[in-house]
Length: 205
Image 1 (cartoon, one colour):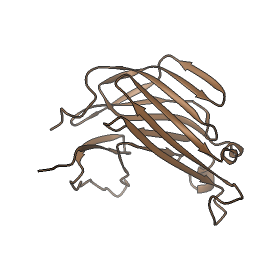
Image 2: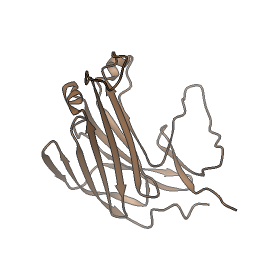
Image 3: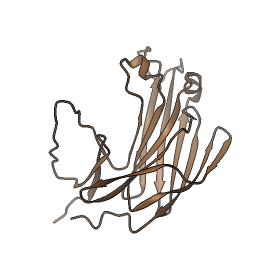
């Protein structure tokens, strides 16, 4: 009998994790004060700050959330416009489109962005302040990283990282803060990892 592979599902509330088969229906608690937002492995989300109005939110820095898949890839995109024009992507060029991708191996992660119509995002001065990487387990820390963006190269040895224990294992949440990356420019972030043990989900029951 054919069964679907298990997939990592992340709840954005406290970065809690679960691993489920694709054909299963998942029941989650929904208390009045909590809105459930679930992210499947292999996706990326660009999130902005929590403020009272959309206009104020558009001025806050982005945090890029990368949820790695067991196959080692992740992809996501971001469309930005002026919030006024009815038509999107036309000749006025009041928009930018960004494609984010990530490739992971046992010892490294490479995260890139590709920007279409960069001038609008540059003019709006949007930035990515923090990148959070989730979904790998038995990792100790980011040993070092190299960042190429906007014609500059930044090398750093080590970064702040935290870990969240899951009911079935240990997943690592790696965070790289204070990046000040312009959304309007392509970037490449290469991370060298310290690790312990196998990162795959084969030990789950």
